[in-house]
Image 1 (tube, one colour):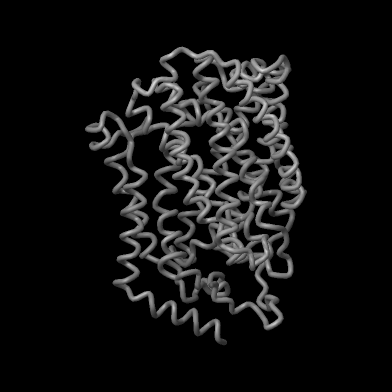
Image 2 (cartoon, rainbow, N blue to C red):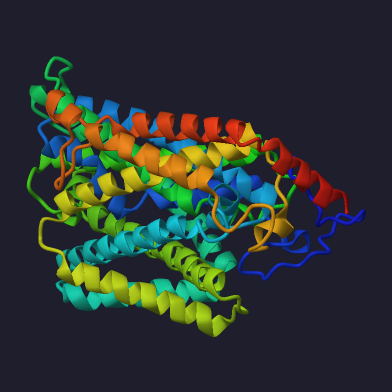
Length: 473
């Protein structure tokens, strides 16, 4: 239960935080099931196709790629959905919740990771949309990428409620279209026997596909609570967890499997051409229709990134120098992130899939220690007992720098390196395993255990007693 010093007997918050940081009870609305279309759309879009083709590209066949995709998504989505449950309980953006673990200033470490994520994903989104629209109607890739970003920014400016209503409608349209596509593929797909045999196992490709799928799902964790925080505070942990998990899991797995099937059927084609080819196997013109709907969903996903980016940038600035949030500042923050994403997209080369895989691997290393620390703190150390007021106090009980979280993060990150394998670096144990990257479970376990140990050795009970004292005032 959240230590709720902000609630009056009538159930209203009498301590008001700026709306960019905290959603008071009087402004909470919606139902737990509304999380399902948000995160289904997050997965059922073009970028997710790139995740599904990585195993095929490394030599795995379709059946083993599919198994790795399902298991990887099931694993990574556990942590993402675990973060989602924090939103209704605290009413805070995900990153602000890192202050009790890392400190008021120390949490900037997590904010910077998030900014990299927003810029990186939207850069790849722009590249993908540029390729797709060029494939569909022959327009300039650069011009269509810029138009895509501007539409996403406009949608984010219009507001949370508007673009999530759009997502709810698109989610049901996409479910129907993906059902038609799946039935058609099962009926008409003609694959070589090699693609469907369990005997042709490639360990390196299997592990790469597993952990890339897990990292992709985990990467939503850093802002999943930005959306669940708008739900009423009485939404249960179980409801917010399962509606998030099922939406993200179904959307992600389904689209990755389509990507894997397209790669197995037409190796070497770009993502848009592959999806069009697979769709047209069902009936002529279906592929382009599927791509158009996927692009529309991708615009809403990019709007989520810009929305989260505006919160993150302003939170960074506010941490360094307290100020009032305005619409102009939010728009400016979105434009800054959009410019960064466009610059990165322009600098990227044609090997989109390899770059995207490397990017997801880097996210895996950056997110893994943080997610372990944040979840252990919420569920095992504090059991949801936080002082919202003190989270916004730079000199409060959580401190400016919290070396428990920072230390556990650094130890967990370093522990992952010998087991990691990216385009930039291959660790000793990864080499011994033939290139297989198993760093994710190492980072999770080490970061969680170190953080738990530091909390016990530094007597965090006294800090929890201070929370209770603040709540009683």
